[in-house]
Length: 378
Ligand SMILES: [Ca+2]
Ligand SMILES: [Ca+2]
Ligand SMILES: [Ca+2]
Ligand SMILES: [Ca+2]
Image (tube, rainbow, N blue to C red):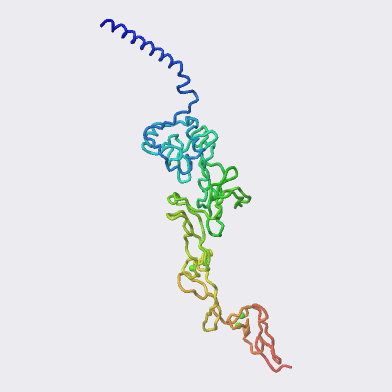
């Protein structure tokens, strides 16, 4: 028994020494086989974060550029409120491109305007995923940080002013440009002076209302369409409904079925209803048609107008009156100031020579004595 125990002890000792040697060897080899100083920071996501492909509306994570997201420097430039992340993103999407309504919805605490509403974004040094620019932003605290900003987020959005086309995160100029056809409405263009345009758009010199031109992305079809997501935001523009009777203002917006036609009243012939039926800016401005005004003296001609209450037109004009020496055809017989002078004397001929000026001529063989007619004098 003892003869067999000695070799066993030796084997145990040998194994023990070998293990010591291995441990020592492992220690020596660690710098070659273990994590190195330049190993990319782990992109392990916190528990509960959705790592499946998401509905990223602007960041193409599958593209070569998009792949940079995995090797970018850590996003420790932005202070992340961990408590917020846990509360708002549990079980939800919170990485770049994910929809958000507050900074706390995003893993990096960066919620900005995207093409289809607000989305989470990320910090950057120079490169960003396709469809976004690496820009300096002061929107997330006092210190400027570089973040990926989605491009052309408001391109083709219905608008009424340049201000509606300017995204707060995007410093490039954007203008509200009228459509090709009059009355089509206006739509946001987007700067291509320092970047390209999306598919379906070309970079053009666009005339501005204030004068001058700007390089802006414009739809190659000449027609803007609404993005599906825009129907919930009520974006709209002024437009015109045009027909043979006039052009009425309306509006068109992004609805459930896309950009609506111009919704507004149809122009119609003007009638007396206290409305501007033909949309020319004048209420009840019906055509002035001649019409008669008759009384016991004569018939004068007036023109049709609308009265102060809705209904049929009335005839507007003056009534006939006894002819006076006043330069007016008072009785509307087409003769002015006829038989309008009478000094009450039978021995004179009276003539209206100018307005209000009656001239009386004494008949032959008559004279006036004491204001009375006398005859028989030679
Ligand atoms: Ca009118
Ligand atoms: Ca009217
Ligand atoms: Ca007359
Ligand atoms: Ca007269």
